[in-house]
Image (cartoon, rainbow, N blue to C red; front, side, top):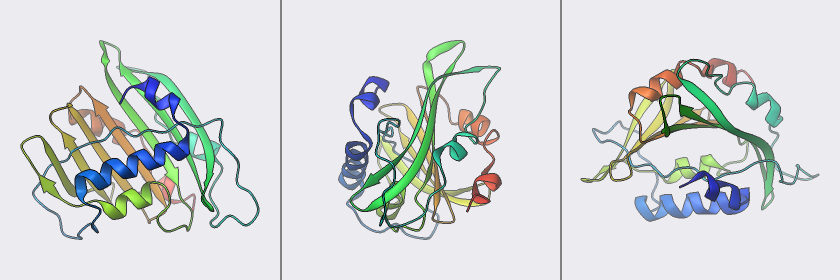
Amino acid sequence: MSDSTVKIFGWGAALLLILVAICGVCGCTDAGTDDMSVSPAATTPVASGGDVAPPVGGVTGEVVHYTELQAFLPTMTNNWVPVEDDAGTLTFDGQSYSQAYAVYELKTDPSITVTVFIQDVGDVEGAGYAQMWDTMVAFETPDMQYYTTTVAGHPAWIMNDKAENTYTQLVNIDDRFFVWVSTENGKPEYMTVFNNQIDYAGIAALA
């Protein structure tokens, strides 16, 4: 999905689109716990920050301020250029989560991008990417592959959409913080570059 589409939809619509896409592909069944020899299919995350309502009294779950999440976004200065970033807190259907994201372009080829989302869902079960996590299942087709792995010691899903040439990971940190990293028109090796820039232990310590 293009960056222009990202800007059109608010966070509420973004969340619904993500869940519809995942449910459509995965059948909305619970994810298994065993690693599977499969590779991923990715749906580029749709989300935008800024113009969203702050938490209000009575909202379930405490989340860190989005500025704390922004501090953990990679700062690329060599081969990658940050071209877009945003952050905010969403209150939706009695639930709240905070989120920060940035988009990076490869200097030598701007068509190759990496998007990083960091999200805190607090103690709300099924909020934000937590709901997406709970619906994912391992599978493989000629065009798509989803499988489980670990990143920095945390459980993660890898998703590869071969037809769209996207490679994505979703990392679960203590069922509270979720880190989404996705590359378009790139190589899986780019994920390692960005993983080395993300302080996963520091994000976990925000709890």
